[in-house]
Structure formats: structure tokens, C-alpha cells
Image 1 (cartoon, rainbow, N blue to C red):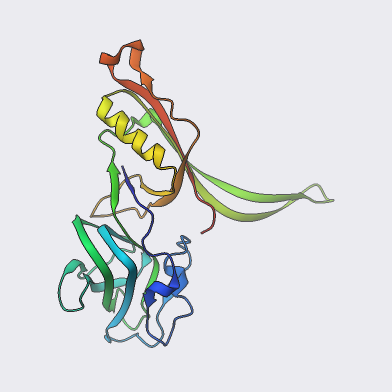
Image 2: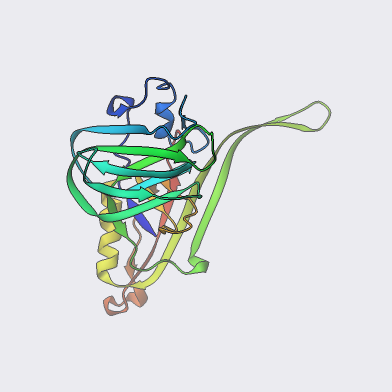
Length: 249
């Protein structure tokens, strides 16, 4: 399990895209995986490029793609002809997790797409995350102390015939993580996350192969309640973390 900073892609003014379809560019970073950018006129092998230009240089260690159909492509920074961050080759998955050593001084990122997973199909990207790792949990919670949940915001109307009419607004992720007898260094790293008091991306099970696509922008809500285990510092610390997905998306 790991935490990443917020997405460094967060406004359409950062983006460059083919003029044939700029209307769906905002869907690339709106945190709604069901919506996405779709190309127009790129059903053949014609290369398509999406670009990000940052107002200030960024540090990057991760690229995530959700709900996409890109078979072949590559990511480069500060140049279209050099500085490769990662590649897709004969890809068939709809989610992609790329992790690399932190690159500093990144002013721009280009995603060059040369083919979709299906022939004669427009290119599609649901969500595109670029950012830096904040912290990898040095010990995941046990199965009994890992409590993820998807909650659904609904408006329920009781109808005259005794039935109901339901309007589903949005599904949201939340989770509770709990540990016992963790070392002080781990506790201090968790405290640093808590003290930031900012939204962060939480990935329950990141992996470069067969990634599930789970990535949620969350807040740590509630208190920081870690205390000495068994009332003895030598026994380590115990406590819990409650995460709730941010609004929007």
C-alpha cells in the first residue's frame, strides 16, 4: 500500500491536445474513471500526442492510467525525442501503473499514443495521473485490520404504492486501517502524512503487472490516535487511520 501526492495534472490550461477534440480533455483528470478523453479521427495508426506543461518544475515518480485502450505508446519529459519515463508495448490491460526513480525538474510530459487495443478504434484515456510518491507503508495492516468500503450516496423516495424510487448520486471509497506494535519510525511516517492535512492518492494494491486500477484521492479524517503498545515504548505503537474519498469526481 502506498500514498502519492495529489495529481500534478489538474487544469486544462496545462494541456495540449489535438484540435479535433479538446472538449473532453478535462475528463482526463476529473477523478471520474467513467468519463474520459476520446480522440476524433485517430482510428488508424496515426500517432496522437497529449501534452502537459507545468507552471513550475515538478518531481515525478509515478504515472497512472485508468480506463484506457492504449496498446502502444510512450511517455517522455522535457522533450519529445528523449527522456523516456515509460512505455506501453502490445498492452491489453485497461489500467497501467508505472513507477520509476524520482525525476526532478520536470517541466513537461508528453504521452505519445500510436495504437489502440482494438483495430480502427479511437484512443481513450479515462484518468491520467502524474505525480510523486509520498510514502510506502512499511507494513500493511493484517486482513482483519483492513476495512475498505464503497459507500453509495442515494436519494430514496417512498412512493404511494409502498415501493421506493432511488436516485444514485455517486459511489465513494473509504477505509479504516489499524496496526499494533509498529516501530516508532513507521509511526512517525504516518504522523507526517496526518500533519500534511491535504488530499493524497491512496493505492491499496499497487503493482506494475495486473494492477486493479484502484487509486483514490482521500483525506485522513479523524484523530491521530497512535499510542505505546501495552503502555511500554519498547513494545512499539498501535493505532488506526481512517480514509475518506474527496468530493467531486
